[in-house]
Amino acid sequence: MTTEFDMAVGEDTADALASDRERNHDMYSPVMQLVTLVATGGILAYAGFLLNPSNRGDVLPYSIVIIAETVLIFHALMAMWIIISGMRGTRPFSYHFARQHMFDPVVIETTCAEPEDPSQWPIMFSGRQADVDILITVYGEPVPVIERTVQAALEVRGLHSTYILDDGDSDEVRDLASRLGCHYIRRLTHTGAKAGNVNNALTVAKSEFFIILDADFVPRANLIEETLPFMVDDRVAFVQTPQTYGNMHNVLSRGAGYMQTMFYRYIQTGRNQFNAAFCVGTNVMFRRSAVLEIGGMYTGSKSEDVWTSLMLHENGWRSVYTPITVAIGDAPETIEAYSKQQLRWATGGFEILFTHNLFSPRHRLTSSQRLMYFVTATFYLLGITPGLLMTVPLLEIFFDLHPMNLSVTWWQWLLFYGGFYIMQIVLASVVLGRFRWEVMVLSVCSFPIYAKALFNALVGIDQAWSVTGATRRRRGAAFNYMIPQVLIFVAVVLALATSIWRDVRLGFLNIATVWLTVNCIALIAFLWIGVQESIRAGRSVAPAAAGARVDQPAPRRGVTFVPVLDRSQIEDARDSIGTVASTGDPSSIEWPDTPAVAQPMARGKRAPRSSRLPRRGETP
Image 1 (cartoon, rainbow, N blue to C red):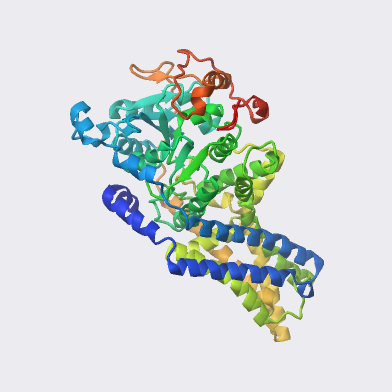
Image 2: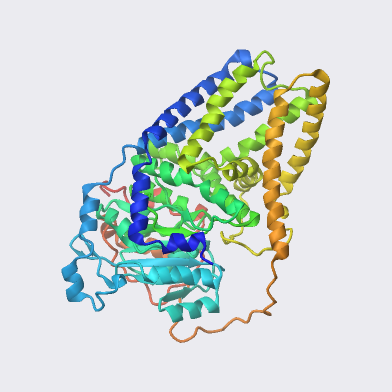
């Protein structure tokens, strides 16, 4: 059976590119611009309504509303500003010139051994041939998923090398690499998580540019030609592309996938105007010399992507985001996978908020970059606000505490709430093409995940790494990650029953009853997702136990095991090539044949800022 994923990946690249460009051309249609402006007006009107002293109610619920709505209003205004800023974005002439001359027919005919194979075409870049590595990070994903990605990576247009970076120590993956004909790297230790895996690979993969792909993201043939031309500007450290999902076959994967649409279509595009687009960990091309300049990929956090972006921006490098889809991946398909993914992302953002003072003068960022990274660091507070707001009607029903003055009429509520919330829904519907109730449900009911991430970041708890795609389908596993929602649902149902009983007696519909009904419907929908998942898990046939795993003491013939690179060697190498690295040219450093095994440097042990290379353009 052909799935939506297969159709997305198998779509002819020219047709896919034309579809992408047509969609991106219509991103800022007159309707989109009008809705954005009206939504901005609704945000400002709602803020004025809340802050009007005459509308203030009891202290506790009013304070909760003000805290929650302040977060919502701030991020809504920032989103509107970023969206409007993105309307100015255009690609420079240098990009189009570099792309036009990337594949020279004369060079292909005279130097290419297999000119009929596009993956063997020499890549011309700034009048010379460029080298590109594709690094596929693997950590326990199913072998068929990895094979799908590797096969597509080998077929990407332009001469390149493909590496499997296996942090799962799988002999099956090793055999897969041998069968498909790509490079394979396995570490002796697994420190530094994904960032450590990439840093280790950089001791072997020494091309001028490298692309990182997660194991479940299948690249299209245009991967290199859509990203490399931006590198003609030697100030650009990385080029990020969207995460587009092809497994939208259940409610959860659709909701999780569409939740990212606004970010990848408008927010990242707008952040280009502030040189603040950040890496999201996959579908990204890096300049090797830029990464070496900051000592390698950042290993002090599981969210190495945004931290590495921050380090590069602090060192004066530029970033580029292009909204063209160059790879199709898997959205989370289970509550467990979704919860762990969101927990990891949110914890990384909160870590920046609590451990990295973005407004300190010692961090060399522009004022716009500081603000953009502050938006990133506080973004997941948005996910906590629905949980805070759910407590407000409970306080009103059980303790008779009202957030707003009772003199506020129903039409005032409708006018100002509608101007804010309804316009946000309309804006999201314009972005997504239509109203997506799955996105609404996940946005409202995911607050326990983000509250846990906030706690983890505050106390410094490290979260175990988890594969993003579908995890093992254990019966009842979904509800292990939904206990807070179940408890809140019970409280909401009790409050709703009490509120309805009171409204019937008084002959008056309380606004709390309306909000409790909305919350109850959202929670029922979320819990139903868990019920459906449990039913599917119960129907699936568990695979027979394969027995205990037997580790191979030595690699097979033709397979290279590469130990972890001592981070101090990266620092020393960076210092030794300071002038070369600062120009953006490829590093000529040769790593030792037997690099020492050592722990990557923790965040607290990073070299002091004064020991880093000078900002690009400054005199040492």
